[in-house]
Image (cartoon, rainbow, N blue to C red):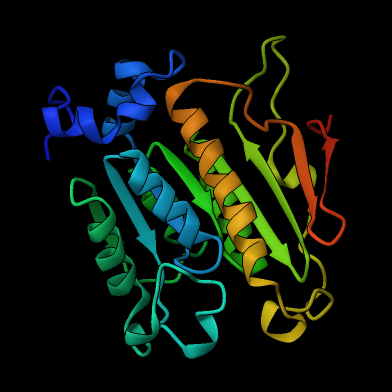
Length: 252
């Protein structure tokens, strides 16, 4: 697929419901086609992010994951199915995305992202969506995106709660620096303080809600529509069906 080529008749039909939106139109759909998005993790959050971005026509999706599909993943990682148990998540995710939209280019990165390789990786993409499940990866990705001046859509979940924000390097409209991940979370919590999903559990549908919101923020960044969650942390309480927003600023 040539991302620079005009939308084909098939693409015009596939994305017709986008194109009739004045906020997106043909120009916005062309921006989606040209976009390169890196998704960290093909798990609970990465699954809906990848599925909706592929369906939306994002031209290139990079996936970072070094794990295989296990039976316990299937309760929430809906990009995989039972036949994929034991398969590398990268292969399973690519096959699923090709079924959704064969026009999307999928790039696979079979590795665990860390402070040594993160900058080189994020520099090849326009936007990064982080759906990782550990603090080491989150900080490495956030620091790399800040250093490479790449926007980052960060999300996390636990039990029945989720959170989402957008980290945008640079300044806001008033010339003030946008906050970074370390402005929001200066240091990782002590080891063992925050239980993992395997230890504490997580409601499967929760990852679908938060991951879909994450995909929406990516689409907003690419097309330039709406107001991204820059300087705002969106909190979702699934049991109460309640959304709250907390504003935060760069530390001076």
